Length: 424
Image 1 (cartoon, rainbow, N blue to C red):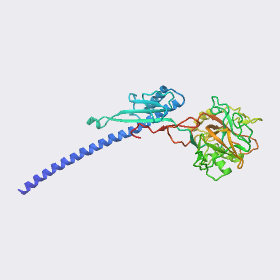
Image 2: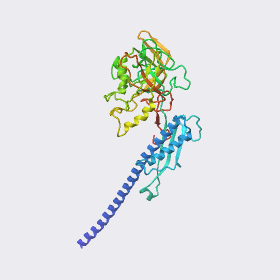
Image 3: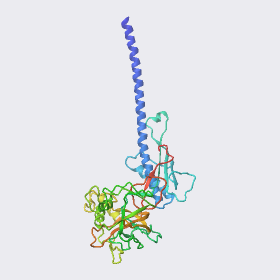
Image 4: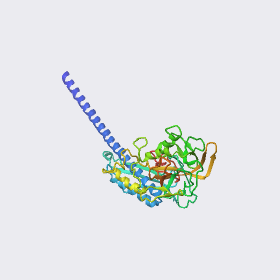
């Protein structure tokens, strides 16, 4: 009798264990299924965000190049289509029914009801993008994701990574950029104050050779966060022109000139951008120079009879990324855009002389972008200059994204925080 009762009790326990194990298995399967769907959603959320970021940047670039809102929207759609066809995005497919592209002159305010006459910022959003559900469909749960991005020009009021030399703005602006025209060669630093250091012959005065003393100041927020990698003197000129000036220059602020030609340090610093084996001051990715060099005539005017320009540099630089690259022109340690010089453009009519120190203070009106055409002279024997081709824009470091942007000098098309995004 006791054995029979014990056996029956064991059968009851076995049934309970089976039920608990079965319930646990279903719970684990449910958790695993949920994890699969959640991970799938997160992965595609990242893919969708990358696609929307690229679309917003593409549309903002079209606006920046004076394109219409319609062409900017087309650029966004084309970018999304290309992103869907790229590797790893096989599941992405856009029919644009849930795509919204808005334009504004302010990165913080977007409205589908307003018409903006001069849009500079674009917001691209994809709402409720449907995803395939592995297990959520069993419970009749729809799975969707949303992503948005805002892009536009970065603030141009404060820039960093400029070179410590300046040029005077021209008197006749017309359609040029403060007197400077694209695809034109200029003397960025002369061997002497000959009165020809800008398009209209404005001079920085006796003893000043277009070099700047970018030492720390506390007036008007002009120059801050200085790191010259040295103390002062010729070494500061050399290292600053080599790219070791990390201060910020404010458009509308002021800068001081550094008296003296310092031809040797100037050439030594600038020429690291074309010839250097130092990883701290690497050369450019492509270091070709024109066969016919730019020069000064007897009147101090720039003469360039060559046929090699920045556009040729951009085209030929592509060979540096192929298997058959010419290492004599494509240094293995080369870095992009080392030959691009962001140069302060100053109002030379606003100069205030410091007779005690021989310096002159000028107001910065813009930052000009110049392509370093050829190596700079390292001595005064040839009375040669530093030559640069003016280009319409260039990238610089510094300047946090915000809504107060202008197009004076260098800037970038950047992503902004979306004010309407729940993820922000």
